[in-house]
Amino acid sequence: MPGGRLTQQERQQIALGLADSLPYAEIARRLNRPTSTITREVMRNGGPTAYRADLAHRATERRAHRRRPAPSRGPESVPQQAGRDAEALAEYEETLTTVLMGSGLNKMGARVLTCLFTTDAGSLTASQLAQRLQVSPASISKAIAFLESQSLVRRERDERRRDRYLVDDELFYQATIASARANDQLVETARQGVAILGPHTPAAARLENIARFLDFISESITRAAEQAREVLHTRPETAPTDTGIRRQP
Image (tube, rainbow, N blue to C red):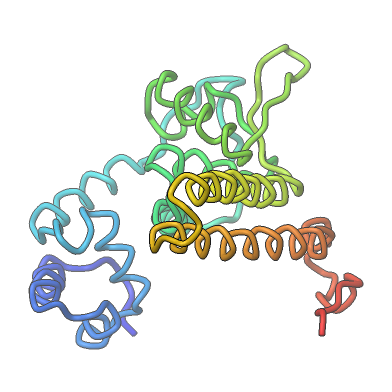
């Protein structure tokens, strides 16, 4: 498969494929490109209904221009790991941001989370995040508030009494449990509707089925999270079979 950036002609072919309602895999096959390349290209440039080849091409040129190394700003600069391919890392960060947006995060929240995931320390200050993403501190504050509400980041004070925002091994477990708890609230609300609508009405039956479904899902998620929790603390060199977790029959 050819490497390098998409050309303007390829973007025009993507736009034509979307207009013909072709799946991403088929567009990728016609261009001899990975499906992930097409998916990322479309999702970061308006999505399948708003994609425009000329606008996407100009946006890519602007992004490439912004990736030029910025001068250091002293102790608040974000440390960079030597030996990494800066362009490959930037492409990966865009891919991860796109996937996180597809999971329901807004764009700034996804960008902040991507920064934290791809930083070796797993933590950055608000100033470092604003510098790395080239956005205002207010944008960072708003994104952090949302991510904290979803248990996706947490904050701590460093030795200079600055707030640092971090991701750690427990956060995905906590976020999963929080998601299950949100289902519990919906189950309770649905069953309140059953009592109000009358247990023998079609509407009540519908709500009861929703409640039973979500109740089962919530219980399954919680049980699976508890069983798999130690995976988050397993070092990469440890084989998955050494974690002590076994599938339930």
